[in-house]
Image 1 (cartoon, rainbow, N blue to C red):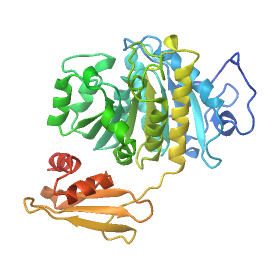
Image 2 (cartoon, rainbow, N blue to C red; image 1 turned 90 degrees about the vertical axis):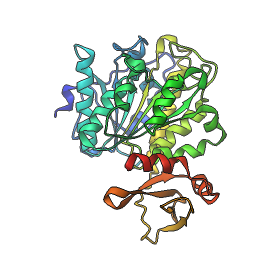
Image 3 (cartoon, one colour; image 1 turned 135 degrees about the vertical axis):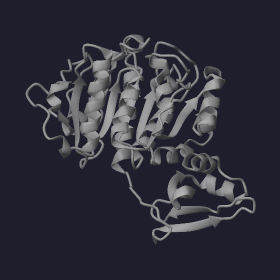
Image 4 (cartoon, rainbow, N blue to C red; image 1 turned 30 degrees about the vertical axis):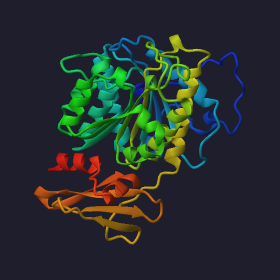
Length: 381
């Protein structure tokens, strides 16, 4: 695949507040696709930024303007890490139709992920998440998806950008789905019941804000993260067609982005629904740029581990319950102090590891089986 056929080079006009970049700024430490410096061998890079200026299937007209506005703010930040190899491929050329863009994005992601490149998407509308999902569907038999959204965008027999999840949730290859940060008064109970029946879940905003560190295990074995900027409160991110006084604070969104970057298996992170037409002094573009910076910082400190009860790198804790056929085995890393638990796959006589928290272990010690274990067990058996 010749990626130059899919992307327009980066051409940013100097903003009014333009300050000449130094050798330490982000734009001076990445490879940028420009008219005089086209895309080279993609396998040379660890991270690729791509803009997707597409909103034709969305009610949020204007989201297609976001990639360049976010990019301009990102370039002015300081570099993350000297050792990271990052490229900005530019903006995808819009297809003649939305479906053309959809197929092009899918094919580009397959190419990048197959070359072990982690992709950061500057959207665009969130329904592009489905194109991302179909790319993983071509590569994996089992997919783990996390969305960050103030509501669960799944309503049966509906279409459009609000309802892209309906097709994903019914796909047999989806193993884990978790939405983070829904607000109860913005979420249809039917959607929550649908998730529960499918052994998926959505974590309420208030529950996360009490202990935001508990979402780290959610990202550890995830493949794809889709972040709707509408999950933030309006005062922190006003560039959206619908407003809400409640939501994540900007610093909380950055922390979530950092956890995403730290995730061992995350290959795609997208920020969607930023609409510059409604922004105030480019505040939301600043926030999105900061989130991308924190994702990359998280990526720079990834510690990939292969938990095993036979490894000296892990402590093993076995919890027995009188009313359970199976013991619950927990593993704690001696290096990172992260936790996993074993979930048996009865029909094939093996076990898989699920990322969890110390709170899950403590819950099991109190003879209360963690919901995460039950949901995983039901999905596997």
